[in-house]
Image 1 (cartoon, rainbow, N blue to C red):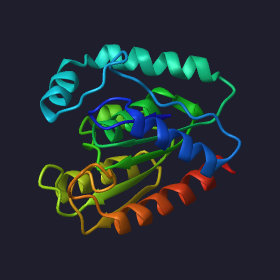
Image 2 (cartoon, one colour; image 1 turned 90 degrees about the vertical axis):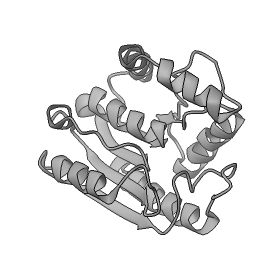
Image 3 (cartoon, rainbow, N blue to C red; image 1 turned 90 degrees about the horizontal axis):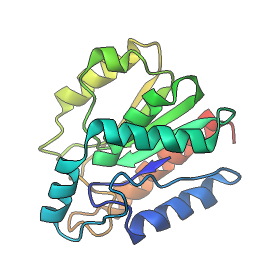
Length: 193
């Protein structure tokens, strides 16, 4: 399951879903639309859509996608920024079907009770120049993930928030390629591809 940044499922995310499907091979990839078809073109629109997103509604959408995938499937999640946070939420909701969670600079879950329900390993790609998501928050999150007896793999990049998005003025192609390489290796290993 792929979760976009706060822009929604735009053409870039559709292309990313296709790219990840090609890289992973014989898997189903779903780009999860939490905005009911709406897509933001400006930061103001994105903020409005993300702020209006009800967490229960988002979880219902994720549960619907998990039901569509089927109880017999292994689930891996991946997302960027807001989508990184939803990647974690979806991994928790997937329960014992969850095999891997990849978060690109997503806000770290702080609710230890919620984290305790996690049943898979987490790979976190963090931007060290990110003023919003601090190292302390990421480290605390990692400690709580490890307390579930699951692996927390942290990769730090000397880059800004949203470094992997080519439409971001602070896009870092080198960091993006490295982060994608780590994520691909992790997903292939955990999904046994």
